[in-house]
Image (tube, rainbow, N blue to C red; front, top):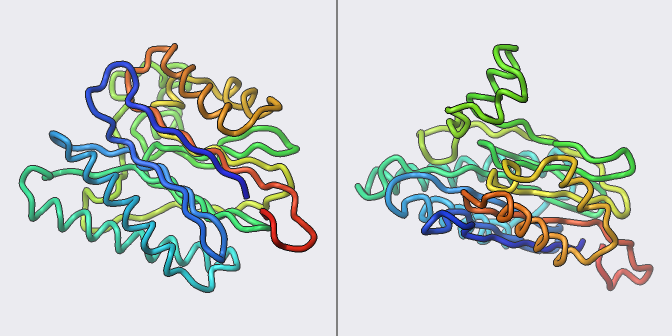
Length: 252
């Protein structure tokens, strides 16, 4: 696996409340984007705690070689992290109400298991094209799903940023899970809404088609989001399944 990530404060916000992490162990790779929310700097705390806890948990992870095991691991550890965030918020008044979105992918040599809460997204680019894997847990997305507004209306809805689900804001939370098969050269793109709100799906898909390094691509995507306004923090991770090496010593 090859991965690259970048997070940026954007052009308007004073602080970056996004946090990202890419962690490797013997099982595979774990990539996470967390977009924090809350009072003064509390979003930083929620997203930062999430990344730090998952880094530790992934180092200790065992027996996550199948999709069922990967989904079980994500579900169990989301509960642990949610409990820690919620208890921290209750114990520290300056963090009251804090929470974070979560989108994470366990990537192995044959599959990727994606879990998400909130409106940070995961996309898949493969031989079938480019598509969104996750579905936003947001008010406007629910209005679109129920036919009350169009997708076009959703882009400019005044309550566009209202989430129906977040990590750490309640004592319990549920995570949506999905597993996809990974073929050689397939790519996953994980991002906060600071990217997806400013760069269209067509532009995102076109960026992944370009023959360039992953570092170049993530840099160009962040720059594009900033050129289009950069009102929010911007975070992106790209994970690519690279060709296997016959002796097993190289990247998977």
